[in-house]
Image 1 (cartoon, one colour):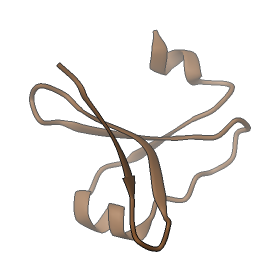
Image 2 (cartoon, rainbow, N blue to C red):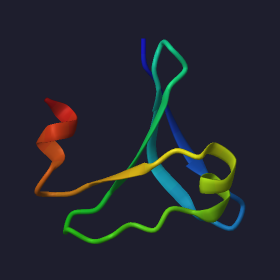
Image 3 (cartoon, rainbow, N blue to C red):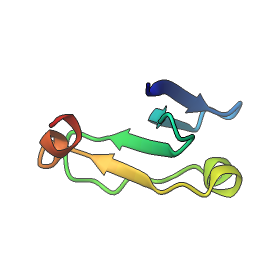
Length: 65
């Protein structure tokens, strides 16, 4: 069972989608329509050490298939 989450700090920085699988492994995603480089919030990076994957109009099928 995958548990979905959203992360945002008090300053408004956010990560669009986070999921934790049944083994406790966290995956994080930032959604951008165009192929832009997303900036991972420093607080998130420091606290969770998880790579935030950027999903855009060129690679979104990799996420849903």
